[in-house]
Length: 131
Image 1 (tube, rainbow, N blue to C red):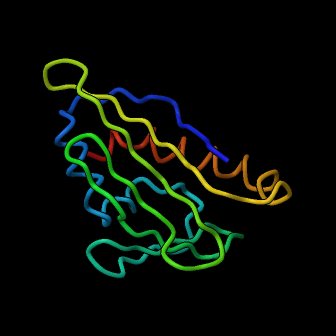
Image 2 (image 1 turned 180 degrees about the horizontal axis):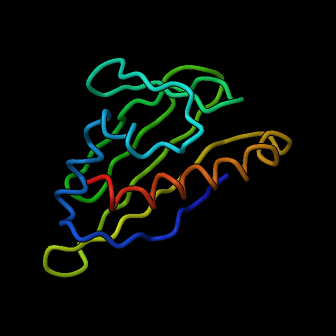
């Protein structure tokens, strides 16, 4: 299953966006309002939970400055990745798009497609105000 957020224009350089997303503590500022738990586990890993959902641990798996950050599941039964693609657009501005990819059975994919789409859209749309 592959999902994409809308492309979000930001009045910051790609490097500034990359640095922000590279610090896992900053993801707390991007979380939806229904977050029930957020905890930084180490410099590259954090745990979060949304109300009514199980806890998820994400770990920074790849960083390609200033274009890409990849977070992936750190343990658990589900294997997925959340990728932030960052591009410079003009002087001092950039755009970011979040991509979610995971290998799920059809029933699971059907159940989580809506909530995950909404989740990555929320993360992406909060980036400009959080930086």
